[in-house]
Length: 452
Figure 1 (tube, rainbow, N blue to C red):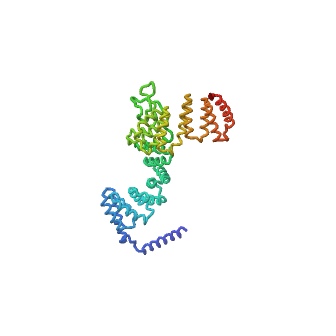
Figure 2 (cartoon, one colour; figure 1 turned 120 degrees about the vertical axis):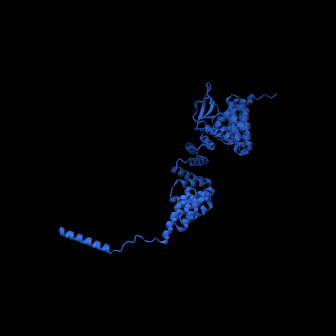
Figure 3 (cartoon, rainbow, N blue to C red; figure 1 turned 90 degrees about the horizontal axis):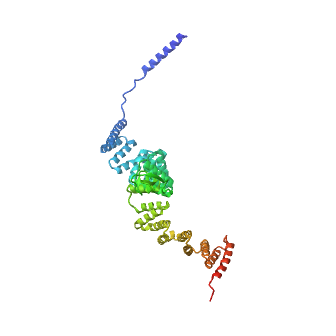
């Protein structure tokens, strides 16, 4: 058995040797074709061109890459490198032509699309940026593409698309301070104030420090009604009210102490606006207007009134009505009621549609202040002015009637209550008013001077 197996193996080896000797010798020195020679030479030239490109010899790079393309026109990578060389050489027009040709034949060439889109972005041709980049998203989701698209959509005022693209860009590259800043602008314009504040804070934390950024963050905090934040008492050697010291804005000194101040933190509107001013933002009226409004809405009426007064002459004509409306509120807050009404009437004169309806309410506010002070004549005076402004308002007639009754002006009280019932026959207090009318009519008759 062993001998038979050995014979089979021996025969197999002999057969293999015979076949091998009969086969023709392999041709290991086959001559390359002309096309292969061109491709090899093209590859060599393209490599040299790429080296020249990154050495900064752009003219040489352009020449070598053009030679490579002439030898091997099908290589899109050579064309993309050629476009880059043209760009670095300041020849964007030539680069654009090369890249547009690449995308016509190879629409999924992502590098070509991104370089071309960057050229369009520099030209501020935002529509073309979108047309080039959006189709490429199905091939690759990367930061550069979303950033370009976000910027283009923002410039085209398509805020919803811009927001989505910026959010995706930030997801892919969360350390882009400029993207956080731009996204903050979109949120602020859309009245998403909490999101805007967060985006601006992210930009600040990533090192983007500009006066305008602080101003915008202050605007976001203002609209969130975060005027002064959580106020703390802080020691600041030789500090000065109304200035920034580190992460604190010095509001006012603590009474009875030296170098101790009530301070607002950096996470407040007043700090951020003051920081914008301290960092050299342009001296514009709208900035000081916002600062005054922060004090007004925080209930610090005297400081707000002083600020409004100081900037009155600088306010633009288109903003005067709004300015006088807020200025009037500060006057009311410090008890200057005549000035309050005068400033409000200036606002109404400039924009009756916006502020005309507020005058009756203003008279009632002043009337209530005099009522609380126990000044009944002025209470009646300003309620009467409110009725003149809003004669169809039954509640004002009722309030004035009650005031006249308190002043023992019974005939006037009766007249006002009757008007209430004329305006609202089913008034909830109808029976009570009828009884009061009857009673006050008798009192008026009794108190009337006797004839003769």
